[in-house]
Length: 312
Image 1 (spheres, rainbow, N blue to C red):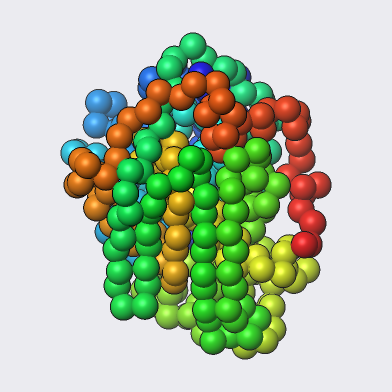
Image 2 (image 1 turned 180 degrees about the horizontal axis):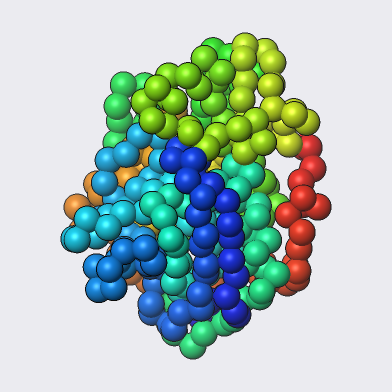
């Protein structure tokens, strides 16, 4: 079965890179609608952008989608992760600016908003994309790989010179609400030495110590420190979850990322879909549906994002 949200929910904030104030609404959508962005500040008829892998265009430090008229929405990875992690397949995202609001730098507030308005199950047939053989892309030491599995698994590895991050490795089976329990509250992060460089290039204009984890050597500069000792790798997994959601349906695969980022994960999806023998559609029977990300998450009921945060 497919799912949408039970009623409209709204988010207000600023764009991480643009610094521009933005209002965004999630609106219930019918079965087989998919996830579509609508720029309310652009002309009707030219302002809808499907959240699909083949609409992604190159962008620094975020995921950006564009339609044939040049309408764009950027920094979509956190809302896409929240939708995938709560099992939402159909929603219209109405937004009045270029960039999705960063909120606290994680997906926790998006998940909270979704669960607080509720999830509505729909009669549409749920399909998944089964990966049939390994597909891999590489760039220097960075690697992204998909290989066959019976449900989505994410395995990520990072290695930073800053001691506050260092080397971190984590693997998760994304079934049974794992995204909500393990990943949704992990924030985007950067090094203090990169902040001025990003701002000189017109990036991170809306970034603060309150919506990102900023590190300097062995120090965490953001107030309150880390939410998890391995928050950095958890956030990279959150990003991967959102970028993989652009496949357009749940993946039955194991994703492995080593120093991978948004662009590489999109390259991996393109490589997968360029090889018809590497994947196939599968109609989800009930035993498979219960292993998809988001299955059963509605049972958590109304939530308050901060209450779900605990150092582990």
